[in-house]
Image 1 (cartoon, rainbow, N blue to C red):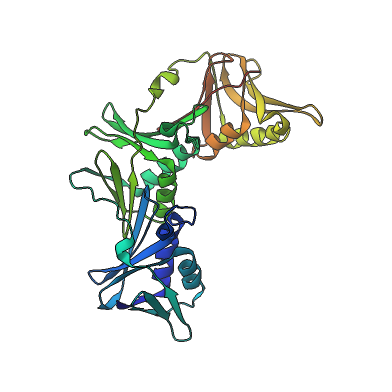
Image 2: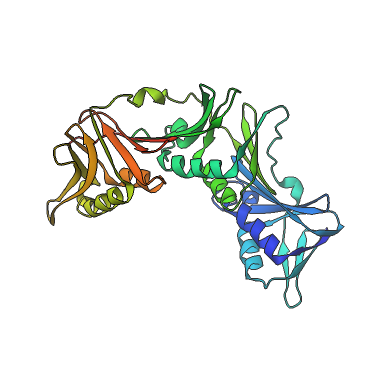
Length: 363
């Protein structure tokens, strides 16, 4: 293998894929990245057997070849090099990396030992706007569980309902649902939230269409020159729609920015009670007030003007409320609930395609 690439392109590709390769894997080779020449391009890939990311960059290939090399060392080294052209050449299993003033040799391992994710032979294919996908990921991943004992809740659920594509995540304490786009084909996919975190980083600066291909076991996202493949989670996702009430006894419409401010202030006094705050809606005063108590330190009440229908109290986790408010973009939000033990629904006031449900705490 002998080729030339730019430092900027190689560093960017290594930063994209290297986080998938980590030293905690049982197979030592999984802490490597694989470099392979493909049609006058260089592909850089890494996998942990559940997720694989490949980044293609332009290169001047003089001789074809492939090798796997330590991800962390290579990423740190290439990032430290000055911008310009880098020469890569392979001698047995040693990769020579040289620029005008830097020469190094990295010991590699044969590419034949590197595991390959099976290709999706016959899969369903669709496209989605990158900005829509990015917003959906930002708004739903926050609600996914990290509890491996309940694997179905550690995923983001893509599914169709009444001709619309939705993505959903829940950890059983809160639930986030985002309507993405119209879709006539049936889709039901449970993708690991960890893979979706990687996808969110990949689509961050991308504005075109994302190509999606999937079968019963895997899903492939193509984002320009980057491909992400993830194994789907097996299991049936809970029928979450039953959790979302359609009618409410108590509702408030208020400024999102003011709601964030009074929740932040109240959360300071809620630290020793695991973030517990009590929200009071009062239609006679037209306000939303939040009370929090720190038995050793004191207490706090903060309020904001709102359009209120009904009156009542509910106790919820302040962090969950703040997480929901931070990923919304509208100026106003609607906060609704029925009784003290019923779920809370938070939505944007205008044309909301995003719903966030938070389960109450026992007050």
